[in-house]
Length: 220
Image (cartoon, rainbow, N blue to C red; front, side, top):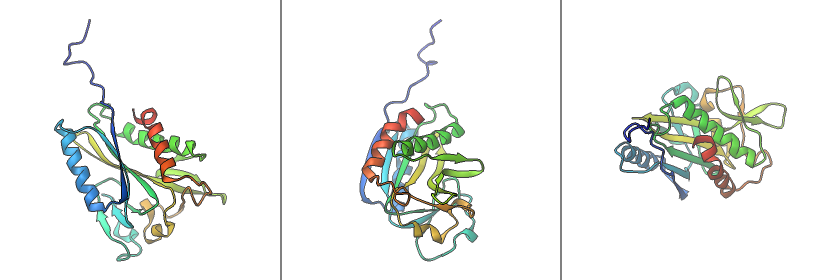
């Protein structure tokens, strides 16, 4: 028996992509995401992956502990509304904000977060680096070359009416000293690294190409 049109699952339309040049102030990015999410909820805007870089700053997630801001006053700190704790953003870090409609993608937030992680892992693999999840730790981790491991990418999301915003951040070639002013994501036992610090000479354009190539396999 055929399903009526009302009962057939609705496939997502192709997601839009946008890349911003220059550094995008965090309040501007947050306002833009809020507006886009409202448009998607209302059926008036398409899903969007927005690639950008921020000027040096910290964002505080909903679980941020003020004791983990180690150098208050050194950089602007913005409440973000996403899950997680403190993180650093700055030039040389690829931020990918994803505004996706989970009403069309399964209504499963845990699966969506796992999809973001898989997206990072596949992207890093394209660039010659093995990224892995770690139980009890947020983000994606890699061998640091000294027998230990370090964090190379962060994940933080918020969902409103089944539409996502915020997303991921991959350290391409940022100033890693920016992370010294916080306990990144509340994890003291391990450091933070980047593609450049590991000797991988990928450009931001290389990273963007890999992100586009792997999106559908991880999240489509």
